[in-house]
Image (cartoon, rainbow, N blue to C red; front, side, top):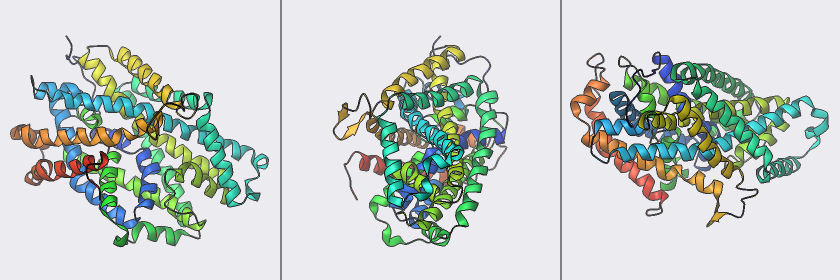
Length: 464
């Protein structure tokens, strides 16, 4: 029967496994690739403070709401709403989450493939330094070299496809091993590696000549740089970074054991996610200021500007290789969680075996991703307004995630039985929940209004 969960459901083994997996889902390219450049474009330290405030006041309550739904129902994103609100259309919120994970993974794995390509190139530069002669190049020559390489890579056919397939293959292999022996096991390995690489890069960054200026940019706020647009960008970044609104945390919540403290878990995941974003800024901005690069270089900060910086540093190819390894690890921890959302839905709602669900989900997302890889090559002529295929997919989270998050907090704040939510948050009385009235206030009133503002700004109905 469709919608029937398997008789024995896999779970995370304990608190560390939950935090590692959920933090791995949240910590990705949004922290290390996107956060530095949006912070650079929107005022640095002042933006950071607003971002942290949104994580605390909105990100954590929305995350707790998703955990609540998943653990109480013990189902996937769609099945959870079907169980908790039978014969009502709330399951469509879960469907939106599954669709979002499916579509976002198709382009996210493409970007992750770019990092894999840069990792290979950095290793090649390290092994054959004499061949490339970066030390003799001026900044403009380096910029031209990496811009040309970036454009050539995107416009190619086989290299983007191969790197995308490699990233999807790694993702499928880990999810194939299961929740505890795959997702949790590799999250416990990958997350410490990610933090270690970041710390090494930070140590290198803060010892550079421009470290003081870079640190001040990140930690000394100038609120004159903040406007309404920057505030909404900070809110959107907090939302995107924490992976809320697309069913990932409902799915992961369903694997959390009943004796784990959901509030502590949500706070730990949000803290780890924010910490990584800040540390990434510490690793990047000192180098940016040391070599006189503008911190508001946009999306090219990672793929064009940073390679220039690395090649101006002693042992630059080594630091570049380490950085792009970091990006690969961060991307992989996120692609795993997105694929699991789709796999859990296929397995439980369509009553497929997990093996069948993984192969069908992985191959169908892979086919869609192959189309995205050709956005600058064979399919460059396919556009919607000013957007190519990749641009269309890249814009999708700004629509899906706020919508999903909005309906999730509306459901928890107004329709989820209070006795059930109190029992779930307290683990049936095991943990005190003095914050409960504040939590309900946030998910009933503040979170829906803030999320609605983000969505209305995205669709162009309001502008600041």
